[in-house]
Amino acid sequence: MAEHGVPKAQAYNTTMYIMAALLVIGFVCNWLVKAVHERHHMKEADLKEIDVKEIDARGAPAAARAKGRTTCQAKPMTAR
Image (cartoon, rainbow, N blue to C red; front, top):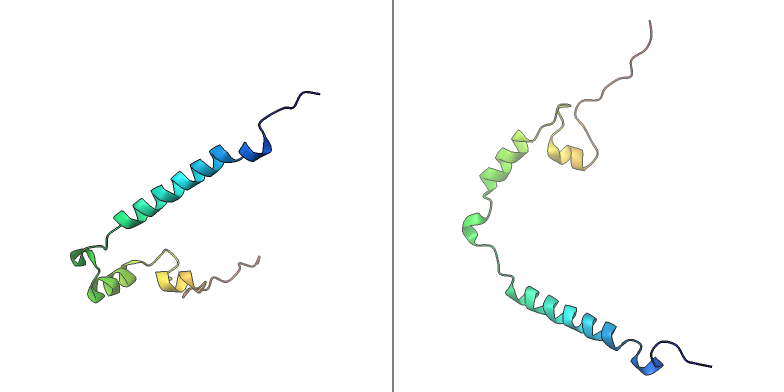
């Protein structure tokens, strides 16, 4: 009977080389990442201004929406 494929000892050679190369690429990319320059950091006043501006049509501020709360509670309409 003829054997198919590659020998068991060589079954994962290519896959392991590819995974090792991806790992090395990941390490290099991680090494190249630098901190954001301080001039790009947001000031406390900017954060407060954004909180005031980010109000949706329901009147709920962004922080309340993130927590699942709204300031305007709509009541269901009932038929008359």
